[in-house]
Amino acid sequence: MKAATWQCRIWRALGGIAFTLVAQVALVGAPDKAVQAAVPLPETSLPVGLPALPSLGEAMQRDLRTGLALNGFDPVSYQLEGRPVAGLPDYELVLNGIVWRFASAANRAAFRDAPDVYAPAFAGFDPTGVANGVAVDSDPNRFAIVGARLFLFRSDENRSRFLQDRSLLGIAETRWNAVRRSVAR
Image (cartoon, rainbow, N blue to C red):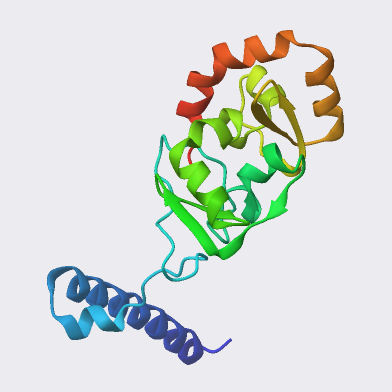
């Protein structure tokens, strides 16, 4: 290559670096609204109106695209119907920054009055994973009700293992506080 071509490329690179530095100084030092408006805000994948993503220490498993707990299934339906029933946007409840959907106003009222009764154990994480000391996402379609508690599982194998080995529940309960602190969503 000719020397002139190299010089041109070097000058372009230096110009780009200089422009970047000047722009950074201008943006950091200037509280001018026109400059701030020109800087695009990072886009979130949550629809407008939903609460912000949870911070470190918040544990309830939820869909990060929609912000919904249980992928929008009604948590009360597991107890009443024996199966997950899709909740409706008309019957939403935001509790502790989490959006829950319900199939009816009565189910929403029941949950609002006693969320600990209807919310899944271990914040919706697979109890076999919790017993192993890790937070493992679950599938709301794979569940079991043991006593009056709702448990969600990642796989049918984990569900079977949990139902056959009752000692896993005790192990999961002793490890849950440590696992909950490790969850960052």
